[in-house]
Length: 81
Image (cartoon, rainbow, N blue to C red; front, side):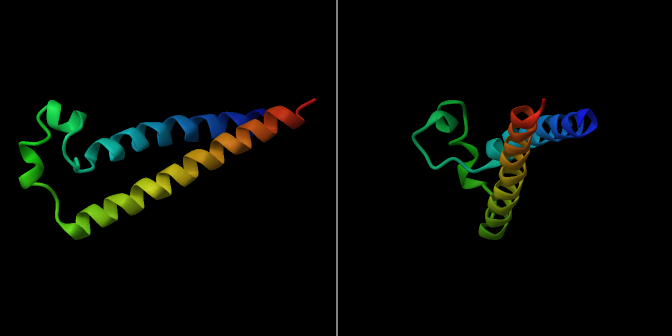
């Protein structure tokens, strides 16, 4: 069980980093922190609709792996003797 826990923790760290990066790559919708720090300047240059949809799919996929690893780590800790 220790090897599985270590693997899940590594997966959790990697997916956390990728989740942060993919969320930061999203185009700002305006009026928020992204505009405050210069996101409004590049919003007209932003990605196309297809790229934004693909980024959404990647973000959802990474978040599902992230949540699954958290649940599995929690189950391992709960049923460990």
